[in-house]
Image 1 (cartoon, helix red, strand yellow):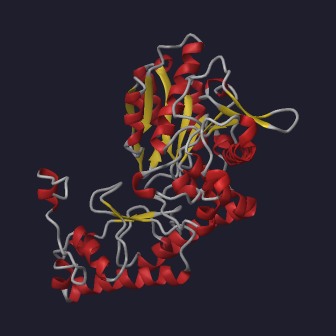
Image 2 (spheres, one colour):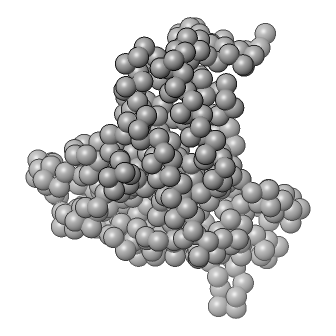
Image 3 (cartoon, rainbow, N blue to C red):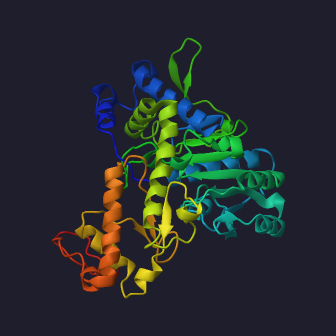
Amino acid sequence: CTMKHNPRINEWGASLPGFSCLHPLQDDDSIQGALRLLYETRTMLEEIAGLHEVSLQPAAGAHGEFTALKVIRAYFADHGQSERTVVLAADTAHGTNPASCTMCGASVETVRTVDGQTDLANLEEVIAKVGAENIAAFMITNPSTAGLFDSNIKEIADIVHEAGAMLYLDGANMNAMVGRIRPGDFGADAMHYNTHKTFSTPHGGGGPGSGPIAVTEVLAPYLPVPQVMMADDGSFYLDRDREKTIGKVRSFIGQFGVLVRCWAYISACGPMGLKNISGTAVLNANYLAARLEDLYAMPFFKPSEGKFCAHEFVTVPQALLDKGVTLIDIAKRMIDYGVHPPTMHWPMQDCLMVEPTETESKQALDHFVDVMRAIANEIFEEIEKVQNSPLESDIARVDEVGAARKPILTFT
């Protein structure tokens, strides 16, 4: 998961009284500044996506998936194709993808990937099995969680469109593409952003979030209301009168405070800054991979042989695990060195998923490398240190199984 620095100026901007003290039921005339910010955020996200129109309503990435799928289903229902109730998803898709489909009353069929790339032959086989007339969309995360960009994406779009369906891009990994590749240009019909990933808004302990969606022109009439619009005289208003809209998916006008932070980050970066975000994120990930590949095996990447990752990489350190440690041991030992452990066992078993993002300095990257190499050396020479870690924290190993089976949810 993209976890980047949250600039303090974003927090300052969101806390300005003109934003933080607004009431959601104020008249449009009295919140022109806020509406202008929302309109500008919307248009910037449209340009970044290369798609026709954006809705800022969804309150999280998965909520964006749900909303976009509702929009797609509304489009097909409006065109007499209500039987399109099947959504295809790559086997590398986020778990929220099939959950969103179920919430929308759609069933899911899985498409196989080979070495991180969508198997085009299998995609066509699944379409033939299900019946093209029954398929609403194909959901793909590109680049994948493994850090692989699916180079077949244009061919995938062509196959999906030939079946009369829509291509949905899970924008969770836009940090690898922002400012360089626009999903609309390679055939995406709809997508969602995770502002807490790509545009530096806080994760906030699980919320609040924001997951704007972008869609093509044919899907735009079905977007949620209200939609922020600009009148001929340059003023801004909330358009609530859209005949084909799916209606409201969030109270009022979305997660406004989060969107203030999103606007601030995009505005501060500008077009070239956004391009530098993705470039630096990819560079940082490959720098780490290149410095660790001799000790931490990587199933898809080997920078020394020209096999590079996108914004993140996964390592399955089997040679270290074979010495008698577990992935948990390695993660716990990282705590002793003051490093927060990365995601484990996702998207593969026994893997660490490493994503430095663009906001880490070379000094921070080098420190991470030094820590990981030190842990590897300890496994070979002082394995007990790793097996008994963390040694420096107030709490060592919690009983995770007991906590899961007999949770204590109160402090009394």
